[in-house]
Image 1: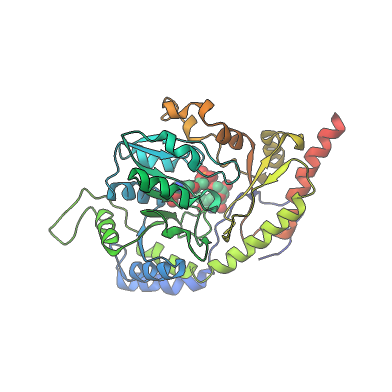
Image 2 (image 1 turned 30 degrees about the vertical axis):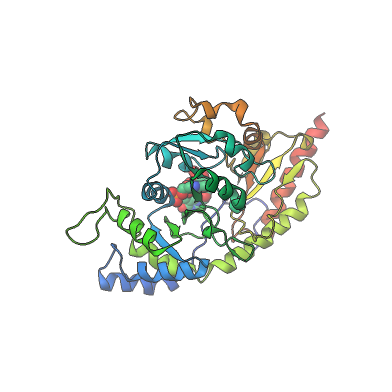
Length: 384
Ligand code: T4K
């Protein structure tokens, strides 16, 4: 896992790399799929993975999906959300796209400067008679201020659907962060802490809601001849479910390695002025799916110049999340997308850089990345 890389790596260092189990562990499961010829539509691996996942996460009910985007679209359908939904501009574009796919108007609200999550103190002012729900994101796996958001939701009779795409395995105050709100949606995309190649899930608080969601993800069928809702095809295949079942055995070790990498970054980056790291969340663990830094003016080298410098040295960082969702063409005409109303999100989007983090990254890789950052700054100071 930790073999040193040559100083000039043959392969670029990417922001992430999927963690996979040894292929020989997966082949016997594939053999079972081949033998059974049950490839999808709720086969045995689907049932086993769903149960094992709920237990692993410590949540009551899970519905597996083909990906988080379809799961978000379905979650909104299942709660019959309409009108306007308050959400964050600082996320992956799928968060807001799930609203547009349901004919819902996103209302963007600024983020909290410490957590980079939706700022509850701004939510209330954005509520109108058309508001039906809040769609916050546990960005980078940092839990939202769930208590404040759910207080507002209760006061105004709004639903809360968490985009928990980044929050696999995150616990706060001794329980899963996924139990909050009406529904939570996970992603198991290749780039996530826990992957099934593609995949996702909805966490439901009760069996009835789960059953409704399970019908929705299967075209609305409840039996061979009865369709009770305008469902979609969101089903996870047996291939993905078998992989997920196996991945559960490896995910804790993968997160442990990510944690060690994050600690190493923290120690090394402390020597670089102007580089801000996010505070570890209060009373919660971290899965270290991302390692965001905010490049301050004091660093001297602007974020985009640093991004290019690292790129020239084959270190492919990502500017998650730049541009803001509210800057994309299908959103920027909305009144709530006005940049003047989103100063904190805009500043974060200008400064953020997600450094490479994944279990196969070596200590030498981390050292090299930080050295390259220091070099960029030193070169600038020398030229000044
Ligand atoms: N909500 C939130 C808050 C999300 O962040 C996301 C997804 C969603 C909802 C929707 O979830 P899904 O519907 O996808 O389940 C990536 C992912 O495609 C996307 O899933 C993720 N968020 C987003 C933050 O990042 P890109 O455009 O950065 O991916 P890409 O292909 O450039 O990959 C980044 C790096 O990862 C590559 O440089 C190399 C490495 N990589 C990637 C893939 C796909 C691999 O080594 N192997 C691979 O198979 O969007």
